[in-house]
Image (cartoon, rainbow, N blue to C red; front, side):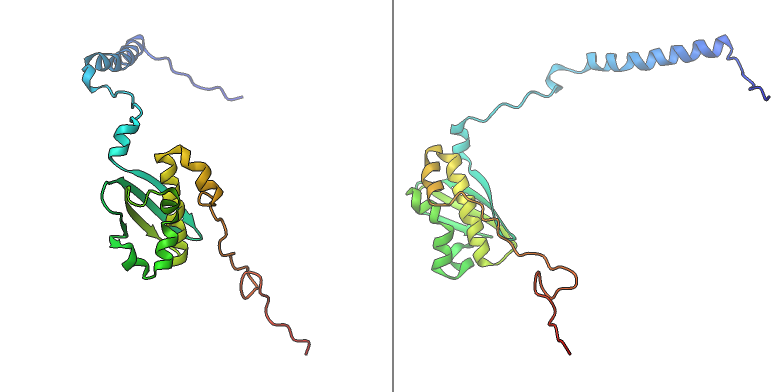
Amino acid sequence: MATKATTKATPKKTAAKKAAVKKEAAAPEAELKAVPKKAVAKKKVAVPAETLAVRYLYAVGRRKTAIAQVRLYPSKQAEEVIVNSRPIREYFGTAALEAKALLPLKASGMEDSFTVSVVVRGGGLNGQADAIKLGVARCLIKHDLLLRPTLKALGYLTRDSRAVERKKPGLKKARRAPQWAKR
């Protein structure tokens, strides 16, 4: 049988190690005491609704692969809608898509109460208009919770989850099989 060789630490080395460990443990306590009270982070407090109304209301709307980040700024002047740094009429090109995007504002009667700013990505124009519609409706709910039943009944708060189905291997499209010939 082989025996393990053990070495004993000399009392001086052990005492020196213990003293070093004590210094390291004491150092953080000393640092904590030295930190001024002003440097300690304060708890975040909820922002009052009045302050929030001064800035803007924010919500995200999605449809197919389009994502719209919507901001509603309170204003007392005529409605202004900016989509990707361009006026909405210039961006969509048709009055139908413009009207579709702003349906929640019209339904709630707040067309002139807000300036709308939107950043939208992905999808086509129709999907983007639907994404903006959902985002605007969600913003209005944050502004006034009493609008929820009206917007919900009209279907503006429902996320339309339909999207293109992925293509499967061995098929031409998602479900379309290759043409089959008997001979």
